[in-house]
Image 1 (tube, rainbow, N blue to C red):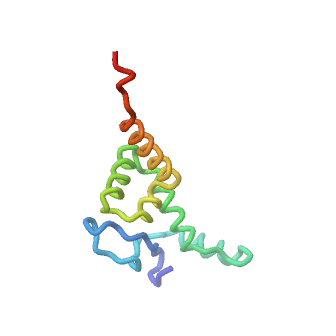
Image 2 (cartoon, one colour):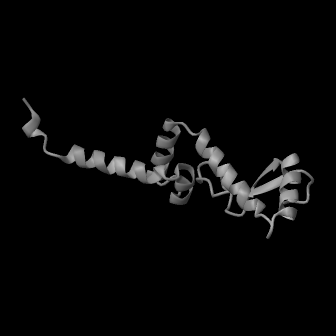
Image 3 (cartoon, rainbow, N blue to C red):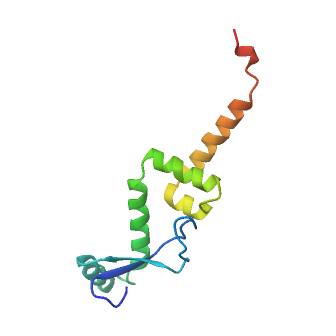
Length: 121
């Protein structure tokens, strides 16, 4: 939490250099309003407290994934493949689909390399 009332700071993965020159230590800042109050209250009543930063990171990750369209996912993977996006960032955005996209690409490459002369009429 930061010292500003009602604000939450969230660490985020490094963005591609074409998009941002930010380092891993940069934060995303937003007005948390009542979220700060309930997080602080839960932290005080929950045995052992709660990791508010981890909750914020997980929540942001889930919302980013929900926001992406199939076209966005393809674009993210293409940016990763061309070296414009780190593997860590691509995995954050794509989650389990990162492996599925890789498998689909490998299967497509394998199919395109197959000898299709037997199938020609």
